[in-house]
Image (cartoon, rainbow, N blue to C red; front, top):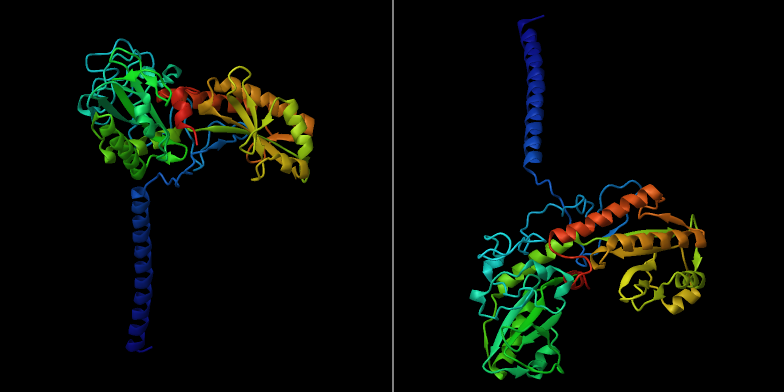
Length: 418
């Protein structure tokens, strides 16, 4: 073998070794780069929420946590789900002691520039220009405040007429439509209680305040809606005449969005499904008879409703497992493969008790119709699983209270309405 051949062989071997070493180096470099990218990547890959903020929580057998429509736990027992935003509500202990000179709760917790209305539980503060407004008291979170302006969930615009005026003087505002619920309140003087105004409310009022809800299940109040609200009040003010200081719209939009996010974190509905096994179906006429025998009545929303005997408030509903709403005609002509009992936790004064009633009704209906009681994944629900779901209901109610929204209270009924 000549020296040229030996040289060529050695060169070939070195070339092969070089290629192998280079490939190994490239592979290690790419792995290191991938590792760095995975560490730097965000870990919270949440998808956009359903704008209706309805979260049917159909917990599986032995489930430990309520799930939202993004697949993440809605909250740990007793705590709202961790998130990056700052709640718009002033954090005040539910049973606070006498308020400090700086206001209730934490002295530094002035909500959004301190433009809160001085609307205390005894309503002894006067409506004053926004720069002088003080934080709302924790009592506003309770059911006692059904006829009270609520700065923490509403955009408030105070009006101070040059002389007391009757309620009919703001009649155009009473019937205005801006896309979110409006409320008007008045009082004869600073020492009087606020009164919800209607066109026939008697008396004359020295202080008037217009209120627009900042968020509900249709989402937060938009810039256009708040602008329309300000325009409505601005048109009425000179007719009284009354001093009028419009709010900063961008700030109110930010408050609305923050409030909507907060409500989305604690908005939970619990469902129990009764379905026929395999390809079975339930005739509509049979279903209606069984539902009405159980105290449910067909409502206008395409579902049956079970109402409290004394208050008339809806405790839970029964809806079609299929997307079709129930109507008298559809129940007469068609059948369904199942139904869903739904408990709206936020709208119940005693969610755990309402769940117990719904659970018993669902069990009885499953037996009567020859169906199965299952979760959203069609897994049978035994007593242990139902007990776990009840714990979720209790946790959901506590999560609401933690942010000063009393289940079934005035705040809850406003924020968790469509």
